[in-house]
Image (spheres, rainbow, N blue to C red):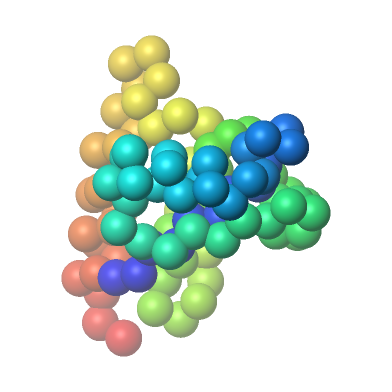
Length: 93
């Protein structure tokens, strides 16, 4: 399994690499995070909500997408996505 984060800053401050590094460290993020200052990835994927989470299978196909906070107002998004990750990992290539 590979996790990649893409940060699309909304403000100048959010685009400062040192600020991003501090947040990554404070949140113990153990995966690479790219900073997309020009929002090219955001636009290419048609994102409208922050965050957007994509689960991509072994063939490179987007299988699941979640828009917005995973656990917003009792939503069980994190559990749902973790289950979907387990399903994808269990699939044969």
